[in-house]
Length: 239
Image (cartoon, rainbow, N blue to C red; front, top):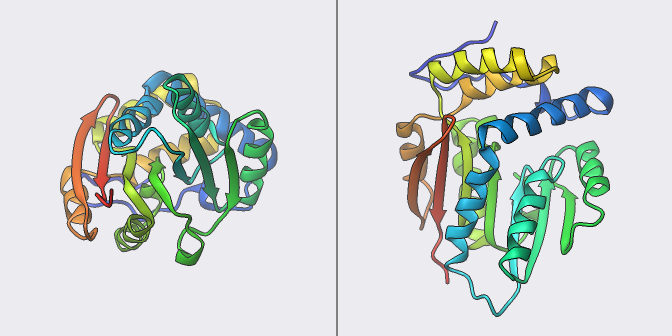
């Protein structure tokens, strides 16, 4: 049974939060996640946010972008394609706590230019790399509010321009529609379960407002986007 409330974020755990998940079950989940992003347009939200953040960057130097919770590197590949198309000099760093998924990312992205992947506990603040721009795509809803505030404050101290957050809107309509979508387009039982838990753990506007107010030295810009997503930008304004 998956708990859903329009008033409160769920605390139910996702199956993918078990870092021992690997092999064929994980491959099935990643394939289904690609399907979701392809059909529901989620990846473009990250690219649009990146484009806005790049307005604060100097095109005459290398721009460093860190992807928190990078998974198998799919989002980084899209960012690299955008940066190449628009003639940016860049360095991409992907961080994930799952060692197996990082190995998958390295295998899939062997031809990806200027990119590295690292196993990293993002709550180990000493290990967070310096960056111009940080990306958090479908990542923050995995954590409790206090953890999100702690993490975003740590990222903000390491990030010169800002943080691009692409995450889900908590909505009963989204919950019901995902149930229908997953029955037609998804095969993995884990992905179907986690997708519903993700929506139940995600954010309404007041959640984001309350969190953003506690991220020191940042300016927030929030937009509701297609398919029950938020484009949540935190400008750190250090450059």
